[in-house]
Length: 238
Length: 238
DNA sequence: CGGGCAATTGACAATTATCAAAACTTGTGG
DNA sequence: CCACAAGTTTTGATAATTGTCAATTGCCCG
Picture 1 (cartoon, rainbow over the protein chains, first blue to last red):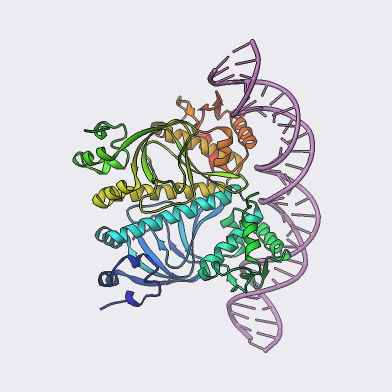
Picture 2 (picture 1 turned 60 degrees about the vertical axis):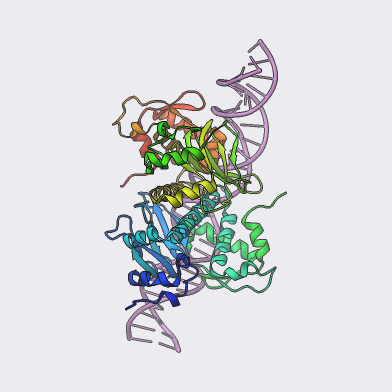
């Protein structure tokens, strides 16, 4: 009896499961547990009793680290199809929380480790995902260490747009683009960009005044000129 | 005929090779190539003709990313026994250069991929190393996004001390500690900490005035009070 | 011993943070 | 459906950390 149906899963061919042939999915089905986590709730803490890993089916997860006095840095945002957790390793000192309501397809760490060892292609997909996270972290290090406040905010808006509407990246010029749902509050955005909430707000306004975006509700905006926004997100060649 | 001797290698049981039994080392020996890179020289660029990977035998490698206008961020420092390069993936947009004179034990990407697929334990050690790099990157994101200038400099000195003299971490209190060789110039340090070289210099002096360190030549210093330096590197609980 | 790069020092500017108050959402319950 | 409360966000005034620019000093190596 299958508790879920991997074969008809929304992310079946975009998550790491894509590495597995239909046949092998039966095995996964027996281990997978669907779980919904409401916005703001903790998904796992360092040193949880039962270490788990999961595919993100929908929603956005934020990973964060903090200093003892409360200063917080969001060190990663994870979107649907991404793989959360760390087989073959512990710790890392990050906390995972649901930024929006999240649906997970979860496994125990042990279960996943077994699958990875058994299925070589799955292991390779996992390695690739991990390396992608490393690349994303380093890209963000460049942002945190060297970009100005307005460049950071522009980069963040583009990141959200690209992750939420992958199609639009390719569409040319200033065609009407779908509104972007920001998965973070101002405070969280500030913690992601290494700024204060006030500075984030001011920069968003600046981008709006410049006509690059249009700000609707607190969490929604439309990109009016993607090209100029991209130019604002990092300098161009002289 | 063996070009090197893995069995007697200085890092044989600390690099990922530790995963392999002596018997399997014969295979490695046939592929490994020792290579010395002088300080400042490029090790690999993104999209090199022959993608390579390597164990760092001695010296320090810096990984960096840049914006088009020249702003640079060092996104990783790699020390002896660490594994450089990315099997099963390309790109990442980072440049690897020798920070000091470096000795590498290098392989082509293809060779290493073959070894990883063939030897499960090696693969797992590689995964663990990659995850360690991810953790290090995230720790640095916290530093870049949220720490003050002096906290950053203190953190950097401690990082160098710990990586160069792993023994001293355990030694208690204010016993005489070996002098620390900084592998980076002021400019490079600034690019690692997301500061300017002037600010780095000022903070080093501040730490010296406070009696936490003693600054010898430009690249050498001694930690006089490790405990207080650690306290300066991040805040403590109230 | 001198040339050249690297580091220090100092004066000043600027970006971003801090603090405080007002305006606005959002959700709840009558 | 409206009113109200709580939490966010915006706005403004001011401060502070860090950056910029320029000049000097120091150090390494031929």
